[in-house]
Length: 71
Image (cartoon, rainbow, N blue to C red; front, side, top):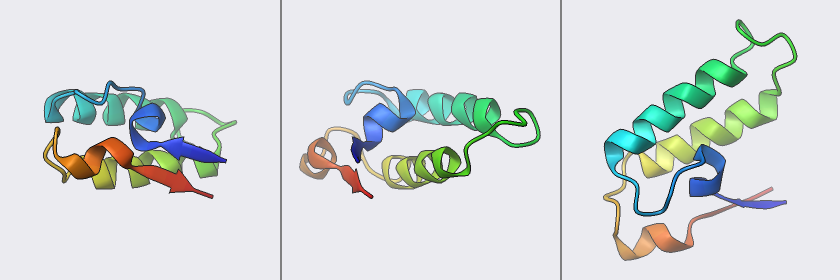
């Protein structure tokens, strides 16, 4: 299943770095095993991977529009 990093973090491709960081923190709290006993490990991995890429990129650069995770 292929998933866009922006979809994984549930943000708009034009989201600011602050919005990306806020979405990341919200999702990590939601899916963290300490707060959710039924947490999906793969979901946390996808969230972390998406934030690792989007958190370091300058939003609006040509490379951010085509980011895809391939599993």
